[in-house]
Image 1 (spheres, one colour):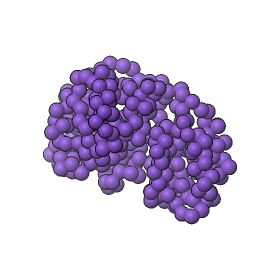
Image 2 (tube, rainbow, N blue to C red):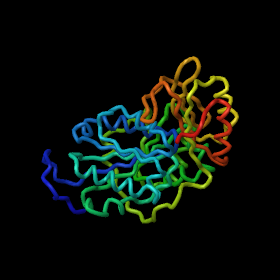
Image 3 (tube, rainbow, N blue to C red):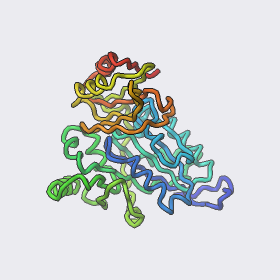
Image 4 (tube, rainbow, N blue to C red):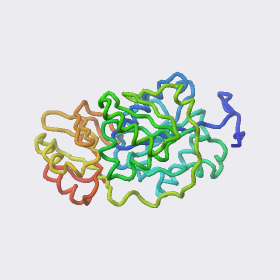
Length: 319
């Protein structure tokens, strides 16, 4: 790795900018883990830059980042590991390279099938300015074995990881833990693993991570069985009707997240693996906190069928 010397930085830092990738399936706790890392003492002094990759038009995950003052780039045209986002990703790297940042955290979309992005870091005028420190896969202890059997990205994310963070361990018993430990050991036996809750990762664990180089070309498109639909509405939604749609689409919904303006008040609604959570609405980039704007990620169902399912509620696709 060649250290960059294109200009004298105001902070005196002259080494490569560390890059950490946070991967893992939908709802595993990537944003929660990112928030924990951003308040870790070492990160606080490194002026982190963030690249948030979402599958959908609405920037929900970016709004969930607790340190809103940090420089943030949102890429939502597709997976970070897909050729369709390469231009946006390279532009973000170029902008970050010109700033006073010592670390970059990349949160990948939950349906991404990872490939090695070191080829990106070695391209163009920013070659040598970045060092890929590691790919952390966040695993949902409660739901991983439920989705891994039929969703290829969940398996690929574990196999490509340089370290595995098993999150939500407070939701499984000893027997479930032993089964998951065995599954992960078979998929990727060589990398360090830690069990945690609420995305807490100790600095000592990060220090143990060794980057493993792999070779695979960029993907041309997202998995054909998975689609994202971003929806909005101009009028308040009837609460019972909305949740009836979620129940009807049930097994097709991999993830739903965003604001919904109900007749009795707005709320942030999140659904993963059949579990629904409702809390206070967010200030999303694409809407006011009190307006409806949400993304639903589905599999084995046409996008048009999803649009038609929500249409009676007053929802239309985001433009």
